[in-house]
Image (cartoon, rainbow, N blue to C red; front, side, top):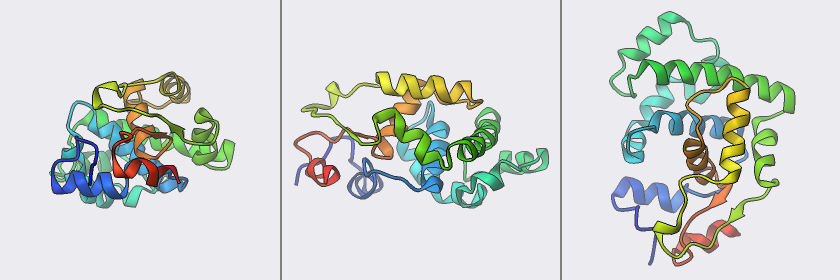
Length: 186
């Protein structure tokens, strides 16, 4: 069975085989990936996956409304939590992003309705043969990044937005030789 070459450890293989590139429309799941992708900046995705369950506990199971209410006391607690990335800027960004996320939900009815418009409401199906062909960002991720920043988000540059889009299936960047390419396209 052929899979994308970045999936090498058991954790990364499970993520690749079960989640990466699968179109997501649940707002809580979209918020989870937005928080995790922002936390990943400068780190490996495997590091974040190892901390994922700790993030679920620390960030109220990725309930954006709950995270939006976090106080300075909660920030101090999060900074002491060894299970997450203890970077003050990233923690504050998660809270700021939760507040902006909730505003988008109110305006559009859901974050899903807002975010999927950047790809015409259907996944972009790339046809990469090698991992070297996969870009770090795209015109769509640039546009999403600009719009999110305009709406008060941080840690959402074009590369983070592209990784988010890949993770939640807005973009199918499985190599065409990968067994998941066709499965995700269905």
